[in-house]
Image (cartoon, rainbow, N blue to C red; front, side):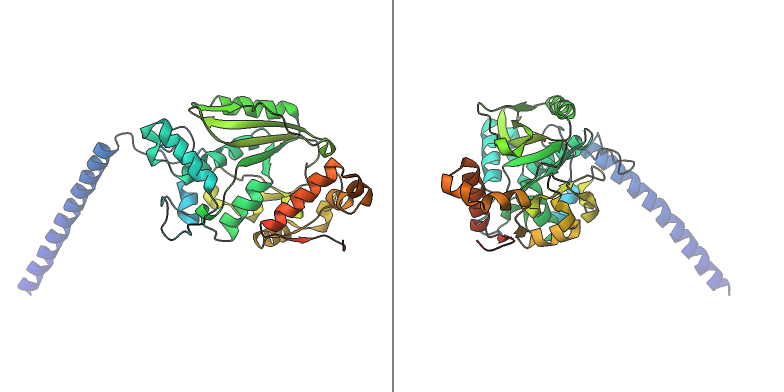
Length: 321
C-alpha cells in the first residue's frame, strides 16, 4: 500500500513538473515570435472591423488571406495550372511591378485581387456596388464553381453609384490610400443610349497601372444587356472569405428585367456560362431598322453578343433570329 502511495506521489510530482515545463515552453514560443515578428499581428475584433494588413505592399491594403486559402491560396504559379491560362493581365501586372522595384518580387496575383476586394469594400461605404464582369467572370466562378484564380482574369472593375457626389467621395477615398492613385486616361468612352454618367480611371500603384475602375452613376441599375449582369455585390463585411449568395442583390433596371429572375437563378446560370438577353438588347438586336442602317448602337450590341458567344457563353435570345 505504501509503494502505491509513493507511486501516486511520484505521478503528481511528474505532472506538476510537466505543467511547469509547458508554461516555460509557451513563454519561449512567445519570445521567439516576438523576435521574428516584433510588431505581431492585429486580429479584428469582429467582422465589422478592417482585416489584418498585409505587409507586401508596404502595409497598404487589407489582407484577404483567408479568402485565398479557400479559393486558390498564396501558392504562386501552380504547376497544375494549364499553360493556356487566361490570367494574362495578372502576369502583366506582376511583371510591371517587379520591373519597378525589387521589393515587389514577392507580390502574387492574389495580392492584386486583394486590392480589388478592398476597393469594393471601400465603395460600399459610399453606396457603390461592384457588378458586371468582375462579378460574372471572376468572383462567381472563383467562389461557386471552384475555378482556380489563375484560370480567370479581369481588366476592369465596374462600380455603380446612385449619385455623382458619392462617386466623387469614393475617388477621393481611393486617392488617399498611400501609393495608390486614380488616373483618368486620355480617352473618354461612353455609349449614348446607356443613359448614365460614366468615369473611367486607371488604378496605379507606385506609378504602375494595375487595372481600370469603371465608375457609373445612375439612379437605376445601369444594366441592359445580359441577365448574368443583373446582380451586384453588397459586402456583408470586409472579410471576403465568408462570401455567400446572401452578399448579392438583384439590380432594378429601367425595363424591370429583374422580375424574370432570382439571385439564385442568376448565380447558378452564370457559373454554367448561360445567360439571357435583356429587353433593351433584345429590342435592338431584333430591330431590322437598326441592322439595315448599320447603326452604331446595333453594331455595338451585335459585337458584344458575338464576343460572349466566342467566350463560350450560351445565350437565350428569347426568340428566333
